[in-house]
Image 1: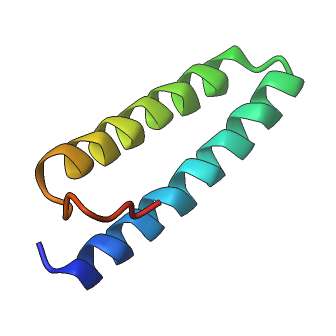
Image 2: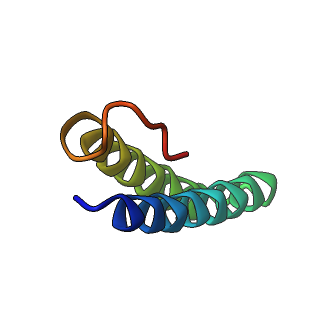
Length: 65
């Protein structure tokens, strides 16, 4: 994958992870287990995607996030 695309994808993932973490924190504060579980699942999916990119696609000599 071209370097610039990896950077943009990781930036997108970082934003989405931050949004999901913030939303999960709010759900936890409001004792809303339904949304807390939803955002926990979303975080899991985003982190699995990031791990896949890191292991299989990204340049091995560069950390993107």
